[in-house]
Length: 192
Image (tube, rainbow, N blue to C red; front, side, top):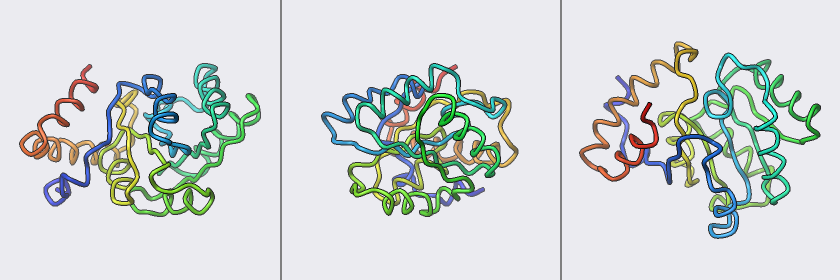
């Protein structure tokens, strides 16, 4: 499978957390000068079977925007799915997020879109996602730091995501040998 051909060095996240809510965004903003967030939707922010954001997520986004972050939702899912989520969030909670559906991660399309839309450098961007093969690989190859979070609900994942999960297992075995400390961080944060 694909996992055998991928270079592990391109699949190393900057950091790992159990969930989106565990990320110390204040520290990333103040100490590492991160200014824009490129965030995956499915299984990073909400599970596949949840159509819109809850109040906790909306409140978190408001705090991030108030802090100074610019937020982009970049999903490989179809337009209807992503549009419903973002437009509901924008309307109900008075938030103004931009999004890209069918973002084709790990290809550079969505990362180039964010760079073009902002005046920020790659070093000021932070990508957040739940998949090594799409989120981490895409952003790392672009020179953008990535935070890997534990998938929220694997049971509801699409068939193509399940294929990526199989490839992730292959990559993780290789990572265990070459980068044991990063492997341990991922496994610690992704335990059930």
